[in-house]
Length: 189
Image 1 (cartoon, rainbow, N blue to C red):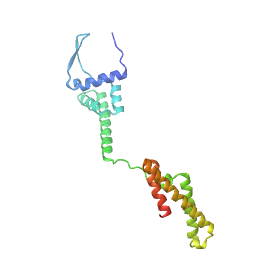
Image 2: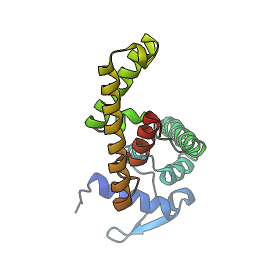
Image 3: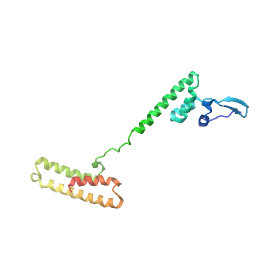
Image 4: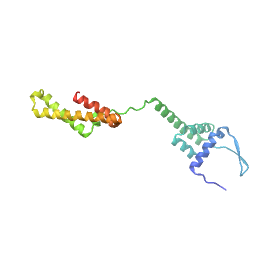
């Protein structure tokens, strides 16, 4: 009576045999159905390929030990594949250990602002630019100063709203701290 094993079952069987050390030691075992003594063999090549593809270091090391004892040319080729995979896995694990945790990318506070905050900021910056190019607020039309004052007043109110919301549910939510600091920098208070 033959039993068909799925690939996963064969991999589990191969792992069990490898982890018990039967492969490297060449231990003989008896099959109960046939009462024959057989030698433990390497897992099938497709199972070894699965170990390589999934990066299972422990299993690959055990297979490597067994393949080193083999004289078969196919096993020698498979040994080079296993060693290459182990080297890549070792290099990757060293690189992960050496790398510092990735720092979050800095985002300018302008990108964190709401649409209304951004609009008031743009008006204020635009009016300041106009006054600077003209040589001061005294040399521009009063409309520009009025727009700048209104934008500054709006920004001041947005900063107050942010502070009140932060007192209720914290500064971390919605990037409140960055927005609040940026608005205060803009209005100069």
